[in-house]
Length: 114
Length: 110
Image (cartoon, rainbow over all chains, first blue to last red; front, side):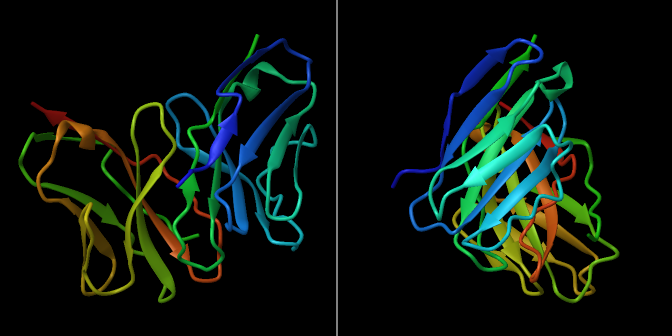
């Protein structure tokens, strides 16, 4: 079946512009995660959505970062007034709810801020 | 979150078994041991997870020490496609987040 889909796959933007990244989770997956991966580094947790519960935003690095999810469908991650340090691969994952359900990751959006 | 320690890198010959170690001396009784791997230019991929008993699936085996303070991911016959960064992660039953470390970069020698 279809996996997690992210778009765009690559995005180049100028410093100071806003960007919006999209994630289409696997159908039926109630949990959705966003992570950031800087070049050569591990994954940093950003935000987690589970059903209609309040999202866990504890990993968002600043108030320039926000994310939304409508029900159990698409999620968008928005970065306002981008900075060069925002350059990274942004990865989305989804899973069925349950403590040990595997996360299924998309291939990410590579964001370059010039 | 309890922390894991992995070697930064390992090499293995193609078609031979690979044993990837992970230390987690501060593991709690409700922490599951999860392994993911990340191939170049892709998102991480789930490999296997376990609590106390050894686990096998089509991708790998997970051997867990009796005191649970360490574990080993076993690839029975490495191929070039197994070259990736392998992450060992502890996940509490009540915690939905996965906290990734820096993992082990596995290189397969043809």
